[in-house]
Length: 306
Image 1 (cartoon, rainbow, N blue to C red):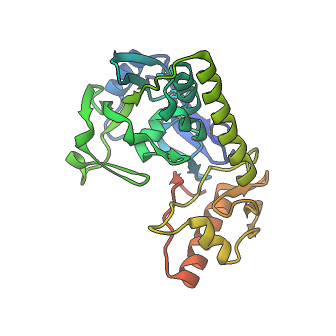
Image 2: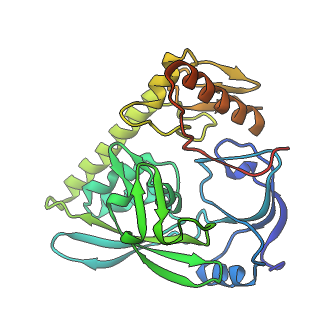
């Protein structure tokens, strides 16, 4: 294990917030077989945290006292499993970026998959949280998944093995247990569009460009942020609740609630993870005091305080 892993590796550069402490053990596999061998040798008491593009995570300043497995640009293939007159069944690796999957969908005339361009993360993260954008949701396309467990075994799981809801994916067979298996690939089905021409591919790309342009006008793209901080409550919007609580522009240290979109909290450059987490808690408190609604974080907060 010592030959293929590193110790006390700073994690800030691997996250979109650019904050956080170090991983006790950091491992980036070269391929699936190396990942299998690594997990087989890993002491069972070691906690495992999986990191992709780092866009939906806040790592505390004290870092992670366990193993970080980094899959960005690893396990990043798209393989056609089956094709019929209706569409394509594809196996998508957990390390593939959602933007890359959107490009694949354009190339193969799969119009219903272009919304993946709006998710700034990997397929592994999208599977884990049922990520969505522009009206689409990951698990609407999932037929099954491939997982790896603590023993390094690769297993096939059905969609029926999970309870799927808004930004939530729960393994119903291991509901009361600590996580002991993780997504390494998804089997996704996309319907064909019959207009399979180069002109149609150009049209799909233009649709993506319009979606991304719309996102740029409404969200603080280009800043240090994690994406949406809170889940939308039932029949409501987190951004609306935060804005009506007069929290736009609220600042702690170098962390600030975006003036452009209230459900984004930005690192202006020198914020610590503590600044960001305290501002998240302050927003929760103020919204609850004003609206009696407790906002649930969408961002995954992990690690130890400093």
